[in-house]
Length: 146
Image 1 (tube, one colour):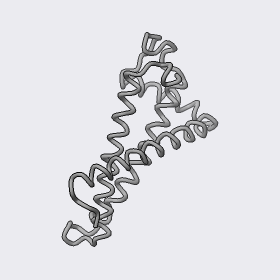
Image 2 (cartoon, helix red, strand yellow):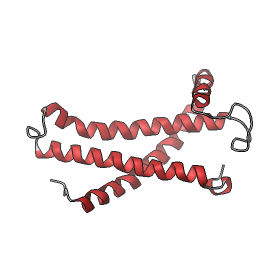
Image 3 (cartoon, rainbow, N blue to C red):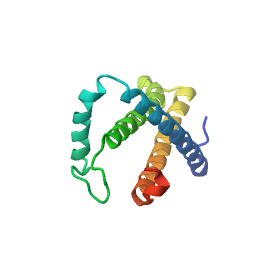
Image 4 (cartoon, rainbow, N blue to C red):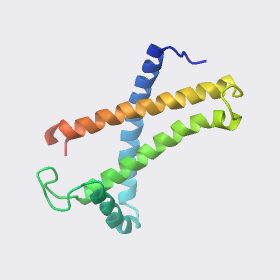
């Protein structure tokens, strides 16, 4: 059984945060490269651009978006969202054995460990994503390379 003490849970969550960062950043880049080559992307681009506008992205060039909501920004958001879906799918998948068992008490030790790991992985994702959003918000464009 995974250690349930508070400090151990944070250690696992921090390790999961590093794993989530590696997975999201590598899958995001790979997904962007793959998506840009797909024939359907030209049709999906306007729809995804509208989604960006719905989330507050600028329609016109602004100090925050000197090129407006460019194709590169839209592709980056599309890829990041899909990488996040992969991580959440894995985290949720780890919780399924307890759900199938119907109750915590009825679940096997493996199922309980998987559930705890899935929960801590999701906490790790939140830590990674919070750091990424804070960095993207407050870091200079030179630091981010964009």
